[in-house]
Length: 353
Ligand SMILES: Nc1nc2c(ncn2[C@@H]2O[C@H](COP(=O)(O)OP(=O)(O)OP(=O)(O)O)[C@@H](O)[C@H]2O)c(=O)[nH]1
Image (cartoon, rainbow, N blue to C red):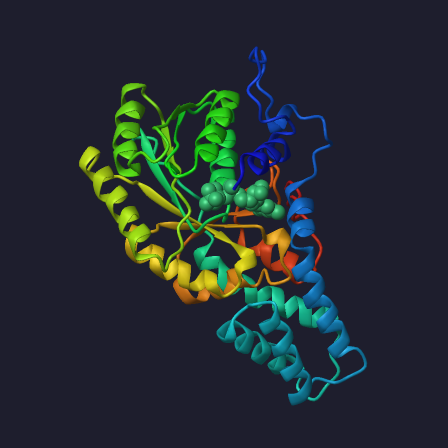
């Protein structure tokens, strides 16, 4: 990505210019101090998933308004789910579950959407795992991998913002040594967030940089080391070999490293994401997924297909470019949002006896 683009990305993330200032601001701008009225996570999630949920709800309404539930309407429902990229397995199962409900009878579109939400939640629940940082392991070393432009650097900035905001000491390693713009950008973010950035010269060996970054994070008593890497297509053997080397060298510095390997997936790439998971998992030992750009697609069901196919934990999802637009993944909220249901009301507190 060009330097210009990266600058735009910075201002979208933190509402500020990406240029380092002559004088550092007294209080770094964080999402908490930004002036825009804060939308709740549900508002951002349902807003971000609007394209997917509209495609599904419109499809369901068109099919089931004034028509009974039979083989033809079920087939049409399955097509709507496949178009939203939920994958064959989940689409077939959901369709069967709807079929069982009221075969040969009328069914309201709302009822279909409720069944859909329930079934999607059942697929996602086992993979919706909070990202855990072992506090006893310092530095906790996180390697961030993915194809070009999937959102790695943005995700690192969002996570670093979250964790520095919680008072954790974070070191960033600018492992995308191919692009000077990426390194410069991470340095600006580091400055803003008060996180040290370890970087090398353009074209420097990324594995060597990883080794140095671990040493530096240790020296400075950091809680977390977030290691960025260059984007690489999963079918480019030499780039995947370089990634293998990064992992190998990290282990020389710290036998248990990396403690977590996050694969950042761009939801807009559709079914190709399934292959990305397979290759990155094999090469780098991916421990969990971050799915970005769910706001940029009507095919957000891909997350369901990935959950079914791979069973890897999904830790975070991104539904926009702002620092607040990345949140821990929860199966129920996601399922309700793509089925076009409302936010679930908090259960009322039990009356005191
Ligand atoms: N709409 C939207 N855009 C996002 C999201 N996450 C990241 N982006 C945008 O995606 C673009 C690429 O993000 P980067 O973080 O540069 O991606 P990268 O993986 O580091 O890219 P390379 O270093 O080129 O491999 C930027 O314009 C980001 O603002 C998201 O959840 N929603």
